[in-house]
Image (tube, rainbow, N blue to C red):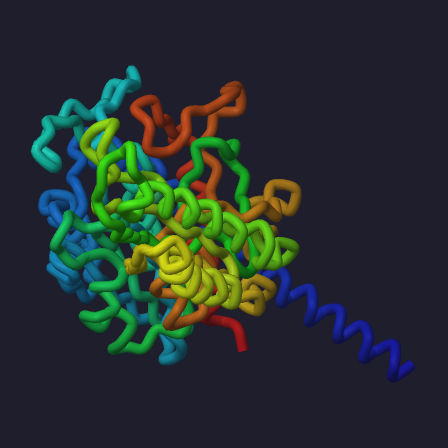
Length: 430
Ligand SMILES: [Zn+2]
Ligand SMILES: [Zn+2]
């Protein structure tokens, strides 16, 4: 009898708890739907007025104006044009950061949307159009919407939410610092210290209403490398009297590809080495003095990344030496591995299921593109996922960074719902 009473009490408590959870969801849901038309309006405005990395002056002003109108603590000019806002909830607790990138690209838009960008600029001495060909306009608008929704429901927030509007994700102009790296350097993850960070990327190839994610390495670490090969110039008819840097370059390229095909444990994750540019020589009958090669390495696993870079450093000078020349290799790191903390993903997956519906949340493969959200994830656990932006009737949607890139705005409201609920649910975790 007593047991039955206890079990009735338990199930009653469970029901009350789940009712409460559902209620929270439905209120956030309602507020997200209410803010949807504003999010679309903001997105169209950003889309029509795109600004390149580290030049997001008007964009940042609009973001800051909105955040101030919500009564948040706003800091401007973080990492040049970044905006950061803090929302304090009803109690002290953990701090969760939500990040949106805000920059556009030097791509001339060729869509027929009424809010198409006709902005032009000079980029690296070439006249070019500017457009949001990666969809960062949608990220900015979504996070502005999330800020509005969460401010409205701050009595549900057990802790602090930090909104990070980040410039220059596509990379700062040559010779400048920028992006997530500079934000971290300027202390964006401190005061208050961030416990976890969430970010999303709209995806032109994933249908609206759907979310894709992957625990662990989801986007690649991007390394740029430069190899300088030194030979000895001679007449093209008498190679034995010189050292041929072009032949050495060919041997190096061949050798580098064996690191991927014969040394990297490809069952763990994919990895890529690409030589994208070779410069050498002046005419058909001269063996030149030197050659330069520029390329990229993409890795998704920290130990594979270390192995591949170590082997490249060993192999390049030794191959050159074998053929009587010399070679050096230098690396520049553009992004780290976008690494989704498996524990955090596990904890937050129920939120994605609740909001998007379990059938709309897909486990996906990694991509070998890079994303500078990875630098935040090097410092704190983070979860980065992809939000559908493709119209259901579209096949072969144009990819990101192309003139025809297109996003169906009906997909944005799910981003507002998910990011808002992730913040609330994360702060409620024990
Ligand atoms: Zn991009
Ligand atoms: Zn992007």
